[in-house]
Image 1 (cartoon, rainbow, N blue to C red):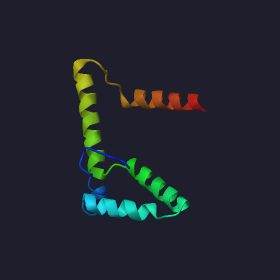
Image 2: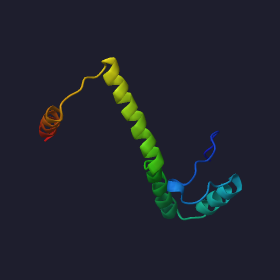
Image 3: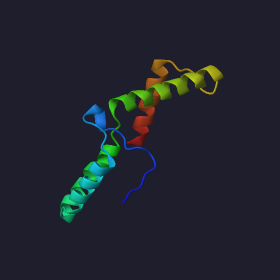
Image 4: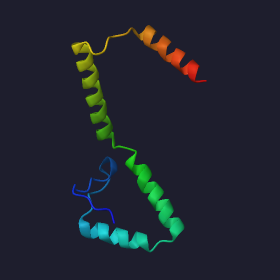
Length: 98
């Protein structure tokens, strides 16, 4: 069984409440009664849900990235490019991949 020291996260996009330990144990017990195929389908659904951050987390990650890029510009670690240059370079990179 998966052990974690962090509190359980809230459900995605605020839909529902965080589950307590007793509730989680009940869900685990019920899941273990499923057939192997049903458990595999459930496992896939759960794993895919980990790759889909909630909207608030998406926004937080974009803010962190934007702040990093601004810091890199201000410190000279990165240099600004015109949009036409950026598009030209992106198109060239895409055409090389084909």
